Image (cartoon, rainbow over all chains, first blue to last red; front, side, top):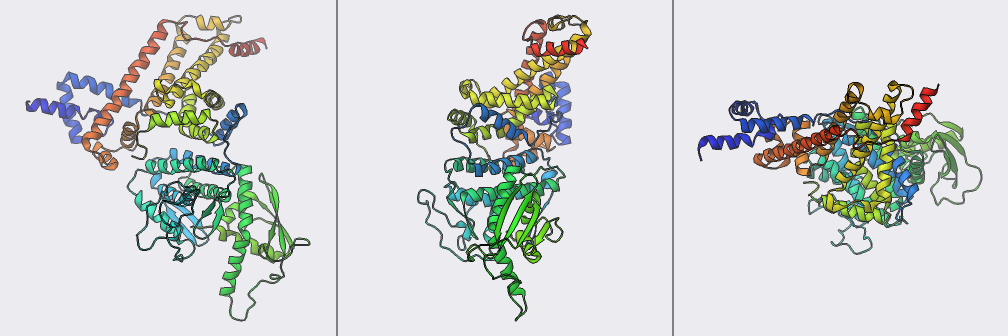
Length: 398
Length: 226
């Protein structure tokens, strides 16, 4: 074969890259000289360049976030599902779809933006793909509980994180359970370690591949959940065990919060959860509150000087309750036990009432609001209300 | 890479799950294909409400009749793309006919508007429909390229990389990157030629593929009667 022919073939193989504007200038110049002399290549070049011209198109209409629910409702009204998504799984499907729609539109620079993820112990700084690794790593607890593969690669052999313990699903786990080790570096060490491992594992992937993996897992989780509609399967987070139905609401909540963190970083609008989903999130936060209150008191007791009273005035009497009234679209009413769930009979009038917007309560529980600056309607024992407001952000995690 | 080429299996599994009435299958179908369906509808109809309406109908059709999809004839994506495209263009024609009818004279019905000559407004409107439809069609073809080709082109073109950078990023040889780009564009070019041939055929037959829709007529009468 002559060198001219070899050159012809080599240049010809470049035509696709050239039409996409993806040749370094020296190669492009050489190819363009060749095109003037070679009608065969010139013809193909023209065709491919024209085809490439159709790649640059105007953006389609924005897809309104509410469209998904509208379309699904429309379909389900025509043909009811035989295997529906359990009500406790719906917020998760909606929030993951919303985040996915935001990410679909991100350009390469936006994938490089760093989002601030505040929680009560500090602020994380993650790029969108790292946020996805974080979400997927924690979603992995649910995957394990449902018998799905863990997305997080195994940790360094000697010191498996407590998160690695498997909660046996319906059938025995393939690996023997790792022995329980005390969490190192606080209750959230497992989450932090898993996030770090998954982030390292996916660091070299294009962001859209990270997105595709996260999305696949969210779909698999909901599909498995639909087969366990009772939602009783325990999910072990390392620092707490939640039934699956609560874990899904928790994951929907975190997905919403971090979705909004990402949206803020790239200056996109992000809509709040649908009212009925917000209500499920408020309900979960309220049910978790007694734990946070205990944590708050323990921290205050530890910080108090010796001899000072460890409990706030009024605490320890047992059975006190606070009425929480949520207004706004997710309106409802809850009675919060202030002295722990098993603190004696809970009779009598609540010691205080507070009125709060549901979204604001969720933002506070995510440590995205200052408890002292939140607009709250108050009635009754002011100290009890302050305590609840300061306990809520303790529900947040890295 | 992230999604090994399991496209046909995904289609058929999803079809079975839809037939069984799994709501999660409907959700996944929507999440996978709504951007394409709604995007295609939106590009052709250029109207938020009409695009949303068509999107609802398309998904309801698949949910109610999953058996209409024949995996032997191509992917679920291409079937749904063709269905959306066809219905959107039908609507656009009806709308254009309705817009044109009043200028054709007070008594000109829908039939007169459609059957009119190919000169002037009619020709321009038809050319516009053709351009919009071609653009939408091509976007859809890009979206439905095989994953490795689509990914290579997207990473290169939308992110402005050289083929060497793309090869490194995707962990493939430079030769493979160049081949994928050339093959992907070849497929687009072929589709583009087909699309134009289709339009030319239609253009030669002014009555082909046209639809009389009473809705357009009713609106015209309402406007003209005041």
